Image (cartoon, rainbow, N blue to C red; front, side, top):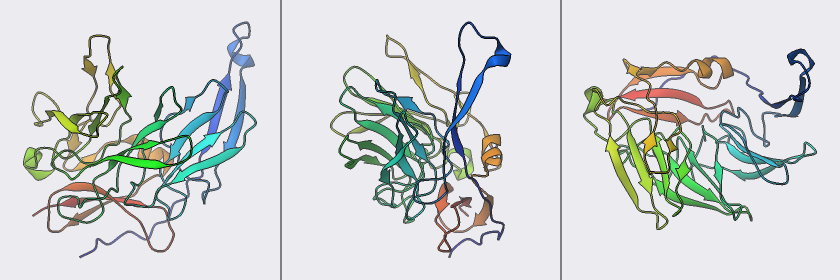
Length: 278
């Protein structure tokens, strides 16, 4: 059974911008420049995550949608304003990256996708999201595909330690009974061999639930993060409204509750909906 979608269409052509300020200039003398305007097609659309910059001044980021088949992209923007799509997601390799990436000394990019992967998600095809690596040649490796029990919906970015271990959060998944079956998310560690360890499973109580922001890590190895409470299965995220990135729908059907992104066959941007189990 497929969910019904509202017919409302939205257009979200987002631009990458930069604000440069000279220390000797006043606030009123700031210079604002549009470095690149996404066309909403193969070059990507809706860049939700933060950017990173290499020593040569190139910028790297992700788009939530765009590309073919509209599952998001990884892009590079050089110092002259030329955009290059480094990778286009197709589903099994991940889809709909929400956060920015990190980059190692060898030029490899690491990130997450909120959807997609090679496994079913709570028994439903489509995947619960991935952790990926993109090397300088443009070859993408799925380091981990979430299946729900180990997390679902990794909307946040990653941090890494000196040994190359990656750390992150998922907004859902983990304890499938948490919050009446809506699930509450996890904190995870992914080692260099691709072995994922759930460091903490949120219970929805005093420890919080549904983390969706990137962690930070101190020299002692402690991780710090935040969470945002899901109320009645709907997460209050004003940026979704501001960017026009998603239309929220409720669908009551079989299976566990989860966040999924449904690629539309008519070419319109992906809709976000909530599957609530009976």
